[in-house]
Amino acid sequence: MFKNIYNWIDERLDITPIWRDVADHEVPEHVNPAHHFSAFVYCFGGLTFFITVIQILSGMFLTMYYVPDIINAYASVEYLQTKVAFGQIVRGMHHWGASLVIVMMFLHTMRVFFTGSYKAPREMNWVVGMLIFFVMLGLGLTGYLLPWDNKAYFATKVTLEIANSMPVLGPILKELMQGGTIVGAETLTRFFALHVFFLPAVLLILLVGHFIMIRRQGISGPL
Image (cartoon, rainbow, N blue to C red):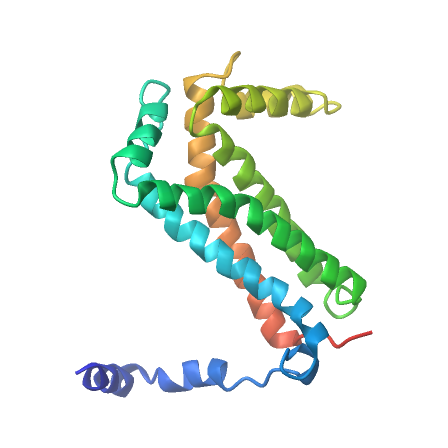
């Protein structure tokens, strides 16, 4: 049945060349762990993307139960953890995945740096990769406040004070993130909007650009 459906779609959209172009793309020998054990370090980027996909899927599940207001936020997280089937597991995956994706991105960045993969003609991809890193940090920062417990509240206050210490733009940035004079309802709403809508949209655009450049320029060779 699935073959018939695929053939019907393929006759009209000619999708076979598209996925064959991806599937048949030759992987350089120096990044194949079957030939070189050291090639494992070239897997950090793929592992980072895999964890990012898990973060997106688990985040979509969490948004079905999370209530982004200061009255119900903590209660909705508690309900998710105690009443929803597999809720504690999914939230645990999202929670620990947020830290793991940063670790993997750091390792990937170090691999790119120490193998000289940021050099010509891949300078633009290095810049895009660093922007992805900062967006990931922003996602971790904005997501930290969402449970609305004491740890999240005071950690956010510290973060906002750090932003406020920045010369010239500090006070403006703090007020923009805080949404008022105190960490409250507007802060939670803004962090939720950034975490669920704005930053993921920027991340998606950057990832598409990152992958297109990797596809066109190829994977850099060893030093």
